Length: 484
Image (cartoon, rainbow, N blue to C red; front, side):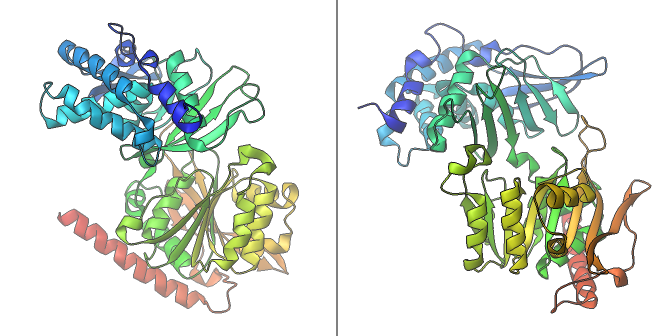
């Protein structure tokens, strides 16, 4: 009987959902962009290019596929779609579905070339079969960090790691939009309907992790809105960020030392300023033996288990679900007190309920990493106190606040703008600037003696000593990397 999860997948994979016999594949509908070529590069089976048209940067994807390969690909898509049995995929996940389709396509593509070529085309076959080859093509480009669709007939635009905001000639077809909705509905475990028109989910596309946010009517006025962030694009190390001058080596060592000695670090900034990138880099730089517990609605943190890190990850209901979810971030923050964490990583603090639970955990001695949307530390303080009802005395538990910025709104550069510590003056919390950008460089603006550490077992001397140790480890990694 075709119902539930299996029925939805089977409906999507059937040939009537695939390309018509003799008709074009979806990748054949891709069009070139206008302008003078600035850079071109490839990732089989696609070619990418950046073009400049006046002051605008345009981005294009074109399939690098011969006419013979197109015929083989079309036949493979038809055959793997017809032969798919969702009941044979255990557990039935999106990654499992495309892997099975890809494996099935290999035998139909055996004559197109060597093993690498067959692999590239078999993976494209899988995404043609499930209806989202454009998403697949964009996921392969490591330089694309996020892409957007505002309405059914509007063109895709994106953020590129080197060229910032780029326009494209890509328009998702009706079939691709319907396929995205089906996958979001099927593999999230929630239903997209009139009462729940928004969903957020993560998809693993052969090692490329995507966070997909989808809005539909009645919330999305234009009928369909999509935001896809590539989590693997933000997988930079702390050493990478130092080399890119996102922050200085000393500031990086200060943050790592503070976290390892049990201080709390909050990363604030506007949307798209690199908050999660810094959070992930700091997490990876910390001692692997620390017991980390993560509470996220969309899993944007790195998977470090395979490298021997201690990670316990909890997925909670997204904020878009409203208050009727059974697994809320607030509830899990409270319960975290009984899970013996050395470090808690909360991802994004979004609502007043999240904030109250967060500060409750801080008052109980829990420390870790989290992000919060605000244009400055001062604005973050105002949001917490005036909008989320947090008492000023609770702010003393924040310890360290890092501000991220994006100097050019549509540019590719993200920076740590400043780092503040929360000190106590006359019984009141006060932000004390400790690092700030001067002449384009992040520099310490206060002596170590001005640090005020409100933890009984920690002194300024201990922190400075720890910073020296962390700095030495970072320098050793740099020397080792340069010698390779």
